[in-house]
Image 1 (tube, rainbow, N blue to C red):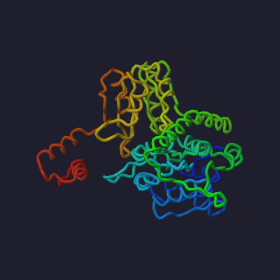
Image 2: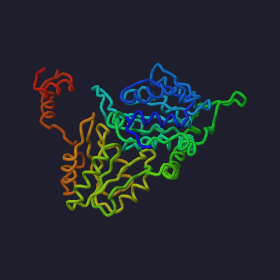
Image 3: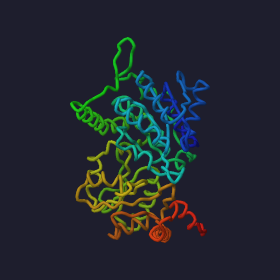
Amino acid sequence: MRRQLEGSRAVAETVARCRPQVIPAYPISPQTHIVEALSELVRTGSVAPCEFINAESEFGAMSLAIGASAAGSRTYTATASQGLLFMAEAVYNAAGLGLPVVMTVANRAIGAPINIWNDHSDSMSQRDSGWIQLYADSNQAAVDLHVVAFRLAEELSLPVMVCMDGFVLTHAVEPVDVPDQSTVDGYLPPYHPRQVLDPADPVSIGAMVGPEAFTEVRYLAHVRHLEALHTLPRLAGQWADAVGHHVPAAVNPYRSAGADTVVVALGSVLGTLTDTVDGMRAEGGSIGVLGLTAFRPFPVEDVAEALGDARRVIVLERAFSTGVGGIVSADLRAAVPGLPVHTVVAGLGGRPVTSAGLKEMLTAGMGGDLPALTFMGLNHPLVDRELGRVAAQRRSGPTAENVLADLRGGAR
């Protein structure tokens, strides 16, 4: 039944219905409401048996998740931004050990400078950690993807991040269909781990592996990751049959068939983007959208098929690689070699991505006037002022503070 719910509450209730047995957590905005709600559900016995552990740090939370999962418990945690970076060492270990931990990443910018608003810098920084990464474009998608994530993680014995835009989704209140317990139980069987630490049958994990076998171990991890590209659509389809509505799988084309220009994006910006494209199609524009749900592993074949008719691709990025440019764009270029790919970096640090701004950018792209790399809404006078200051003064001061002072009309 659809109810008006905050995104975080909807995710917490859904995770609870997946019957996690251990939830180690450390609060950090904007994921805090998720673990707060779960702690209350555990305290009241709504989730049982389950141990909720207040960790002393994000690193501690992931370390606890590794231990719990290795001991045979269905394990869940959540984090964001600097918290994800703090647990990075353990994030890689969870993947390397093949532990099916599910983690929500409430996407938020990475400092410095400090910024609590939304972009994809945090999860994108961990794209090569060995975790499957799924991106939700709405709170309903976030709910559905969490259920699918537990099944996917446990079938493949790999950890899964479900990434949802901080504040834009986590704190948005909208109608969401949270599945009931019997529906989840019918889809997600009791947890039977592929590997488990058992005193009756002792083994060691995390062994030292030298040059003689390290390549093979990494290759096998790659092969198991690629299995997700076949497993995810099957599991998403089964969950869609159970709940009676569309559930996103690896890619989600929207009016892209036969379109000359296709815009590729991840996350909640897809809502604004599809509305903008609808308007441009009504005016005769040959343009469509390709939403990516799976980013790791990257669905090369699905992307290539969806972009088969396109003459150009515009990638709307909520993060970028400093000194290089687009992150998603690099994967797109590998998937569709020879097809012009334009990178548009937008919405960094929570800057609004508006329909008007998108239409202006897409119109330029359709007309062939879009550079290879564009920073949407960039304040060029503000940037030029700081570049001039740096060139003229050896002790020019901190960039972030200088830019803020210029923006506010003050002087430092």
